[in-house]
Amino acid sequence: MPLWKRLLRLAAILILTPVIFLLGCQSKLIYHPSSYRAEDETMLGKARGERVRFTTSQGAQSAFYVPPRSDAAGLPQTVWLCFGGNASLALDWLRFTNDWDGRFAYLLLDYPGYGECSGNPTPATIRESSKAALEALAKHLNTTRADLQPRLALLGHSLGCAAALMAAEDLDVRRAVLLSPFTSMTDMGRIVLGWPLCHLNLHRFDNRKALSRVASHEGVRIVIFHGTDDEVIPARMGRALAEAHPREVTFYEVPGGHHNDLLSRVSDRVGDAMRELAHSGVR
Image (cartoon, rainbow, N blue to C red; front, side, top):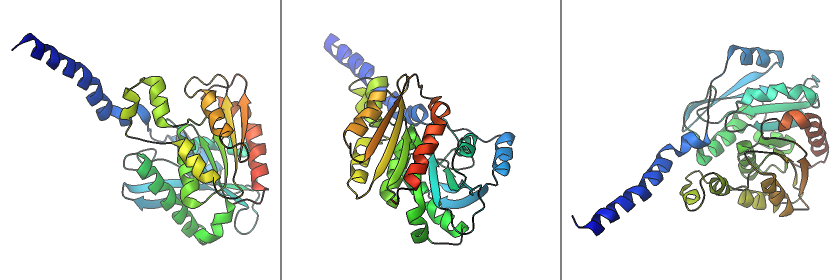
């Protein structure tokens, strides 16, 4: 074989090997699912939480409904749909819900493949799961989606910000608190992998575009918290999202805040923001 052909083959191997690797293991780089432990069940019981079961194209799914601590009659004033990070489980939110307004209820959602949920997470299956979970919650509460609609608000951390913004689009929810959001998964790939490998992204979460669509509706109010020392998603990403929509988005930069300790640092402030949004009269 001529030398030039051998060199061309070698170059092709060097180029295609990382491409094939990234395409083959991309999900494992993005998603880190885990299962529940006995102590999680104990926390759920203490919160008087209940499973909300439903089925999607991915198979059997479970979310968790946590009622208000106030025991008020009728439907809750506000139901927060909560989406965690890529290595979190839905019941992790229970470490914080007692810090927040006792009139709030919560629907804690896992992604397909996480916790008790079967299947595989992708942007499409996460969207499908969120919509099906709300329908299941309405049935669980003996009400309709239309009755729940004005009571809904969204809470997300990291990857959960993308899930929350997709839910805001699909469910027409106009109140949200976002913690450590990225601008897009391609932008994250540029940080981790560099150009041009970042464009091999198959899981195209794009919070810039999603937020633009959500913010185009009347009365949208979103609060973003982002730590200055976030070592995973730089604070400039959260700031860029807020600066693109200054009327709809309020941005709080948290000095010294890291990616995984942000909520612990600002739980009280998050609770205040949630209360303010709940009383804003916006959907």
